[in-house]
Image (cartoon, rainbow, N blue to C red; front, side, top):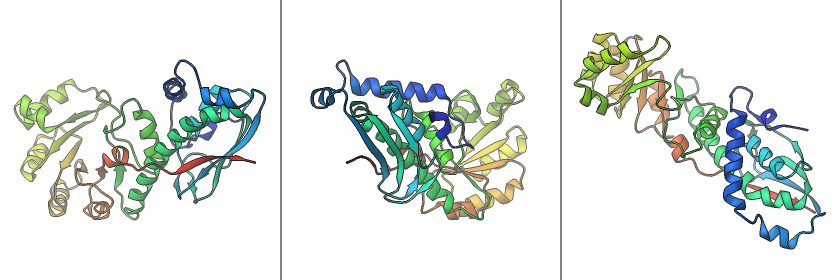
Length: 292
């Protein structure tokens, strides 16, 4: 019997606890107090069925562990055969899962399972499209905290399935000083001095700048590990790379799209972060078809 963790992308961790929590929350939202009244009313209890989860477009699959956990939560008698695992490239019309067992459970699980696969595969596919346009460069594509509330761990996992990298997961795992922090703290040097005094030896400090003057000030302090270059045009990004001379990691942010990503990568920055990977990914078209 396959398990949700066996379908995970082997180069990206997603906690089994996060899977269980997401599935429980989604099913509770769908089943409410009375369960699937349509399937209860129309399908005899002993009826069995076989179905296939089909990709209706080409792209990168993600979310299969969630789909499997959804099915297994509703019936221990459901059997699933996986034809691919997360992060696989699939073609339009390709069978992804074959499912057999109690018909009621399969029908009840259908929409929740498809929601997980559609959402996460959409994120993975959009990420892979961005990554493909930077081939041959050293720049890494990163997501942001602009995620669906409650689904951050899943969506950031999907980014990794698409070949991208994760920025910080929350406010607690890295120091990222934004323009408002600088304004309240009284300037670049004061805010960096306070951050450095507070940070543990394993905590990185990144600071946002929107001008080359600010970048020079950051470089002069010697207190940051990385600099976020906010909404800079291509010429300014190139000049920032020249000024930096490899001292700090540079991240481009703002205006990062499929159309602009190749040119941004060519400037020589180390990273580009794009909120669109998670907040604007289109749903991946997939379906659950009952086989006669």
